[in-house]
Image (cartoon, helix red, strand yellow):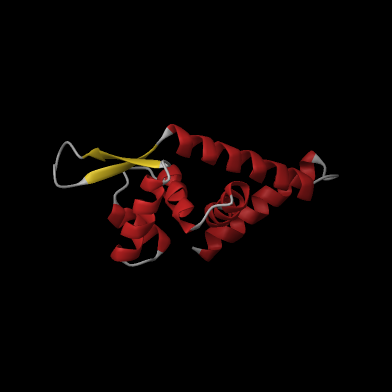
Length: 127
């Protein structure tokens, strides 16, 4: 479910903002459970370090992401959403929810719950 949601989020975010692949950085930050670095972006997006650096630089230049010094290691920085980045994510979330609502229009609550249960089971089996 997480993988499908992330893919959907990227597509919706890009469409909603008319944005390029640097918006994938927002998705990585949004889904992270720990501070995000350029290395984490590279791993999450399955790209090499130079590509991740370019994506992060583009996201910073667009005002979507900021850098904060790592208090434990001054050579590293963590990536954080700016207000503009958070607003872009919220817009994408709204668009995704609307797309899901449209796709499931006419479904009963029981059908939605069963779909969620089966989809979760499917995705977990794929991991």
